[in-house]
Image (cartoon, rainbow, N blue to C red):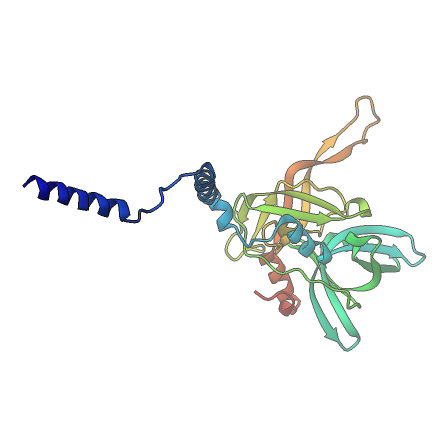
Length: 289
C-alpha cells in the first residue's frame, strides 16, 4: 500500500529529526599535546629509574663531605718539646676513646711508637685537637705505653674533654678506597686518598697479625696518622711508615744523600695489631670489637 509506506517513512523521518544527538567529539591540539607531554614525562622517569639503578641502590650512603666531617675531628697532632718550648719531634695520631678518670676527662690517642724513641732529657708531650678548624687546642699528654719493634704503636692520655674518637671499621678488601689524615713535617693537616693495594696476612702465632699497604702518598710527620674507610669513615689502621728511595747528588762528598718517599708504598698497622697492643697493656676496653 503506497499510502502506508509513505506514512511510515514520514513518521520515521520525523522521529529521527526530533531525537537529540550528542555533540561531536572535537580533538583539539591542546589535548593531544597534553597527552604527549605526560607520555614523555613517564618515559623519562622510567628511563632514569632503569639507568640510575646503581645510584638508587647507593641511596642513603654518606657523601664524601659527610665522611670527611666524621673523620677530621678524630685526627690529632702530636708534638714533643723540650722544657724551654723548642720542638724536637712531631707526629700524627688518632683519638680512639674518651673516658672519665680520677683526674677528670681524658682522651686516649694512638700514634706511632718510634716518635718517642731516643728521647733524652726532660721533654713535654702535647696533643693538639681540632686542627682541621685552625690552630687547634694544645693540651698536655701522658705517654701510657709505647712499642717500636714488630708493632710500632704508642698510647697517649690527654687530659681534655675535647675528644671525638674514631669508630673502628671492618677489615678492608683489596681495592677499597681510603683516606689518610696526618700532619706532614709537623705543619698543617693533610688529606691524602688512595686504595688498599695489598693485604699481608701474618703467620699464625707470629708477632704480627699482618699489614696493609695503601697507595696514598705520605711523607715525614704522617706516621701515626689515621687510615680511614672512605665510604664509612671507620678507622682501618695507622700509618706505620713508607718506602724511600735514596738519592745521591753527583760530585757530592761521600756520605751525602737524601731519602725520598716512594709513592704507593705506605705501610699501615691494621686494627688487629692495634687490639693486640692494647690487650698487652691491659687497655683492650679502649677499642672494642
